[in-house]
Amino acid sequence: MSHGKLGSGWLVTSLLFFLGWVFMYADRTILSPVQGVIREEFLLSNAEVGLITSVFFIMYTAVQIPSGLLGDRFGRTKIILFGFMVFGAATALTHFASSFLMLILIRILAGFGEGFYYGPQYAISSDSTPPKYRALGYAIINNGQAVGITLGLIGSSYISFGLDLGWRVTFLFYAIPTIIVGILIYLFVKTGTHAKKVEHAKTKAGSVASIGEILGNRQLATIFFIAFCNVYGFFVMVTWLPLYLADVRHIPLSETGMIASLVAWTSVPAALLIGRLSDKIGKRKPFLLILIPVAIASIVSLVHVQEWDLLIAALVAYGFETGLLRRR
Image 1: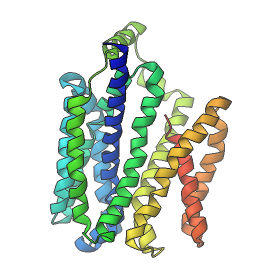
Image 2 (image 1 turned 120 degrees about the horizontal axis):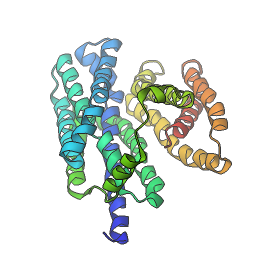
Image 3 (image 1 turned 90 degrees about the vertical axis):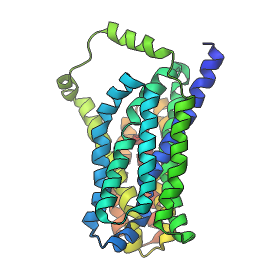
Image 4 (image 1 turned 30 degrees about the vertical axis):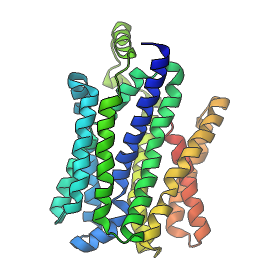
C-alpha cells in the first residue's frame, strides 16, 4: 500500500468513526430533554426514569469485552455493523414504546448494540493510523462525542418542543442516519496494514502485565479513579440537567437542550487549549489540581446560585474541566 493511500485511508477511517461517535452519543442524550414528558406519559417516579438510563449503561458495559473478542474472531467492521444495526433498530423501536417495561427492554437492546463499537473501533483506528497522524486521528474521532451530545440535546429539544412533533418522532429521526453510518463504516473502513506488525511486536515484547500489577500501580489507580469520577459526573450531568432546568429552574423545555449542551461543546476548545498548554509545560498535574476543585464548585453552584449568569458560568467551567480529563 502506498503512503498516499495510507494517508487518505486513515482520514476516511477517522471521519467515519467520528460520525459513529456522533450518533452513538446523540442516542444517549436525546432521552434527556424529554424525560419529563416520558415521566408524565408513563406515570413514572424519578427513580424509574433513572432506571431507563441505568439499564442501558449496564448492558453497554457488559458487552465491551465480548465485543472485542468477537471482533478479533469474525472481523471488526462486521461486529461494528452488527452493533449499529441493533442500536439503530432499538432507537427506531423507541418510537413505538407503549409501556415502561417496553421502554426498558428497548434501552437494554440499545446498550447491547452500542457495546459493539468501542473496542473494535479503537483497535482499527490504532492499527490503521500511521504514528505521525495518530494524535490528529484520535482528536477527530473523540470530538464526535461532544458533537453527538450537543446534537442529541439540542435536536431532541427542538424536534420535540420547538417543532412540537413530540418525543417519539425524535428517535425515528436519529435512527435512520445511525444505520446509514454503520453501513458506511462497514463498506469503507479497512483494517490497517499495521495490525499484524503491531500484534507481532506485542507478542515478541513479552507477557502483558497482570491484573494484580495494574491494580497495584498507585499512579494508574489514581488516574482510573479520577477518570471514573469524571465520566460518572459527566453523564449524571447530561442525563439529569435538562430535567432539573425544567422542573426546578422553570426553563422552557425547548431551551433545556441548548443550555445543557454547554457542557459538551465548551469541552472541545478546552481540551485543545489546556491540552496544548499542558504539553508545552510538560505536566498536567497542575491543571488537574486547579480544575477538579473548579468542577466540584461548579456542580454545587448549579444547585445554589440563583443568578442566570452564574448558572451559565458554572456550566462552562464544568465543561472546561471535562474537556481536560477527556482528552486522550
